[in-house]
Length: 220
Image 1 (cartoon, rainbow, N blue to C red):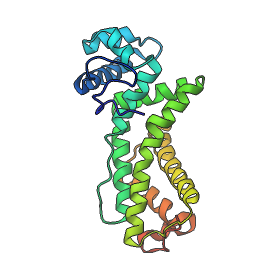
Image 2: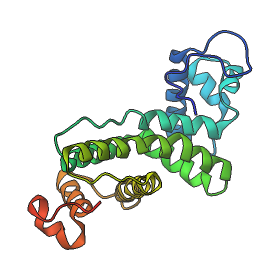
Image 3: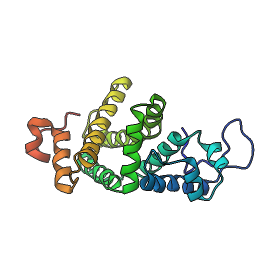
Image 4: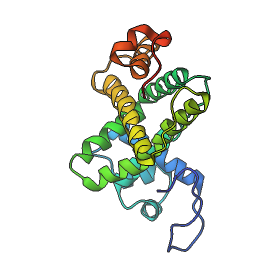
């Protein structure tokens, strides 16, 4: 899966001028703007090309259709998420959850994400693209956070690669699913108090969450 914001090469098997990262960025930004204004059903490749100031043929050289384009427009936003080392697993989780929640508050992010998820219920290929372009790419944050926590001695190492992958998937699903539900489905605030409570629950479990950071060691 390419990263549209950094890929400046021609697609495999095609010739011509190298792709422009600036043009890609303009197209993806125009896609998000058009989606907020028009909604999924009214959005067309022509709308995007007009807003971005490029020919429709330029779009079709990069994306086969609207679904691919919108997913990549969403993926570009999520690729901006980062996980600086905050010194502890708990602080790392709180930071990334607050950052994720702030992203979901942006109209272009929430509109685009909800649109592609809704459309994917009827489109298996779109679901696959969401998985590869957004979900799988953002699991990097879980992998990085766990590696740091293991290096600090906060989490045990897992020798079984398949078990480690399963754990990564589970942690991602719990964090992403909870925050998306809270922010977009329930429309409740994801503030510092909620994030601290959620992080304690994630780290210490139902029996230990009330004890907070001084409670039993994390079991994840």
